Image 1 (cartoon, rainbow over the protein chains, first blue to last red):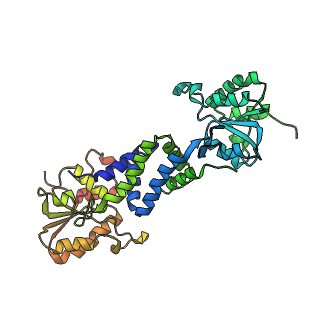
Image 2 (tube, rainbow over the protein chains, first blue to last red):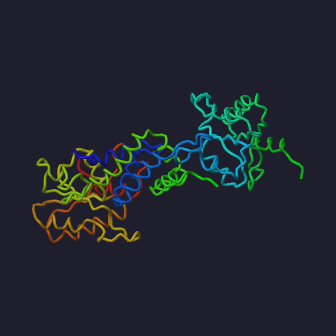
Image 3 (cartoon, chains in turn green, brown):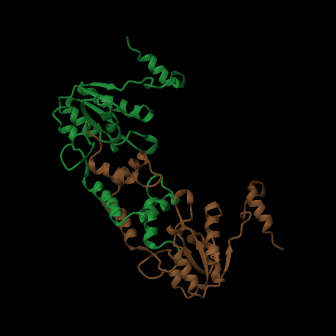
Length: 200
Length: 200
């Protein structure tokens, strides 16, 4: 019996380890690699090794950055160091930066407190957040974890933890998303939108 | 504005080039690579480069194989060289080998004739098939392209091409798949199953 050549089987196995990639998809991806030129395949492989090699967490805000020093946001003299926005994930930083509205610094937790998935506070970058606040110079900490149960629980846990330092702890506003329709808004969102109504 | 670090952006772009992988999936895959150990990332990268480097088409049957010589099937003294099974894709060889029924050799076309996708006979490994048959010693060529329009057209094209050589050209049987139910069989399959009925 002859199956795929061993080097192809190995590549299929590697692709099948990726999240959300089954055996059939892994085969399709492996065949795609074979259809590349040697140079394109090398570029792909180099991107994997390079990303793993050069990307680290910023020692200040724990966001992903290249090299050893603080990230571009933490280094920037244009950013307001008295405000820290706490997010669960580096992707959330990208989303907030896209809005071009926020001018303060960040703190990336790399997860949320999730008792069901055995994710306790010890797995997150919480200690370094407390140390930043304790070091002084911080006026406000904005909780920007996701508006789900785990994000809420994490935000509330952190708010309690930061209470001794007498900083203002705020939460992103809940409400109707811009451009959506009232009729499609769920009850919880509508309730929060009503609670948070503002003078016009 | 700060997005992902450049090395991460590069990796996301590389993943996004894979077939069936959108930007969001590419980000998820890139973050998965960051979560690997350096050794695991190196193994993944090496699998890509190695597969591309060592895998070639067998000079006889055009199936994928490692190294320069003929593949294990073509080299095997146990296989019957008088029968050639023509398939569109290396995956089809794997499927046929899995059945442990076929003892002849293969010929992999690497595609089918597809006028809509600008795929003419010139893009396929047809010339080498004709040469194998012309060289003599072949008694039967089994067309095992897929039972769809393009697979059918390709099989008929090849059958006409091989006519001068007076080999027996056959086609895989159509019929009800084993283990399925009559009520779910489509009209065309049922018609072919009736046409191809056999004495019990």
